[in-house]
Amino acid sequence: MLESGFSMSYRPIASASPSGADRKRFDAVPLLDLSRQYGAIRDEVLAAIERVCSRQRFILGAEAEALEHELAAFTGATAAVACASGTDALWLALTAIGVRPGDRVITTPFSFFASASQIARTGARPVFVDIAPDSFNISPLEVHARLRSQIGLRFAAILPVHLYGQCADMDSLRNIAEQFRLPIVEDAAQAIGATWKNLGAGSLGIAAAFSFYPTKNLSAYGDAGLVTTRDEEIRERMRRLRNHGSPKRYYHDELGINSRMDEIQAAVLRVKLPYLPRWNAQRQEHAATYDRLFADAGLNAQGSSSPVHLPYRDPNAGHIFHQYVIRTARREELRSFLAERKIGTEIYYPLPLHLQVSFDHLGYAAGDFPEAERAAREVLALPIFPELTEDEQGWVVDSIADFYS
Image 1 (cartoon, rainbow, N blue to C red):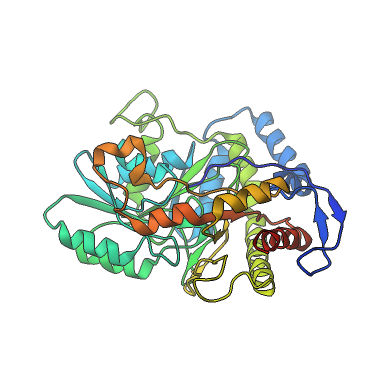
Image 2: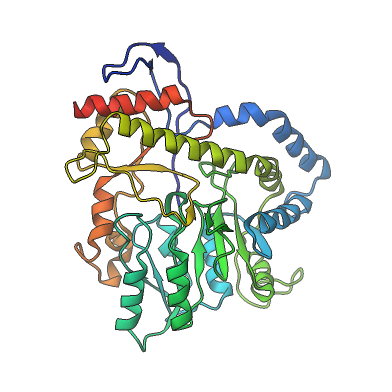
């Protein structure tokens, strides 16, 4: 999962690029600019908000119910449950499939904190395994090795994260899950619209958690989340759990939480959902443009001497580029250089989960997951959003070329 701030304003200044191409120079290129998106859909959004205000039904009404049906169909799942955040979506999914205190759930140490914190919130123990060095996603080889080495312990689930918008290797993970009779819960917070062999993220496990935090590809105007599932009993339990464990008003069958999606967020998401395929396609086009610009600048040559490395894109995965991330050994210096030119960047994530203070009790130490730790030292996210222009991308790459010249 991913949480981040963003800037908005930009103004092009005509200038010849010192790296060779005649491009515009920009006084700023934001990491994300939602104002450009809002300008295109403003009237639809305001009409949807007015519709909610006119109805005077603000929590789990017609908009949330319609959104559940629409997103279930969009992802290829059979059902969906709207909730208040992507973080709650993870807890709802894990709790509804029966994860309980004393269980163990395998996940990645290279993700947003919620991926592991919600395992802990159920009373279970997060069990980390390293990532694949080429994709940043959890390594199926490491998952298999951990399960083989700890036969007899009570594992309850595997929780892969589809990091940066690329699905984890779901063929391998599903084979492992079948072998060890474990359910898979997808952390699809960054992967709305991503696919694995043309099947949608959200339909690849027993349940999947989505976030609609304002920086996501499909974003609300506040916090919001949703869980998809292929199991009707799990759906019904999540519906109870999100509403204080209540099947009907004032009757509570178990201890749940207050995690109900408000109608304004649902209405905004319903306006945006039909645009999402095009927005994701634009992100894919921008990623291809970055690839070409880096190659043209000689910044992504094969071999360890290249100053910039681009992550592997699995041909089975339909990557929707929630983030476009490069690797560089001089990450902090480069980021400072780009900041001087007011080019937005972010580090997702600077400290792996196994080294977070709140997980000290799990007993992990530096060096336990070297690929996750190396990624945390090297990754840098560059500006990417549907309305980004090629001239802006050119200025970003030219600036990186200037740094390495």
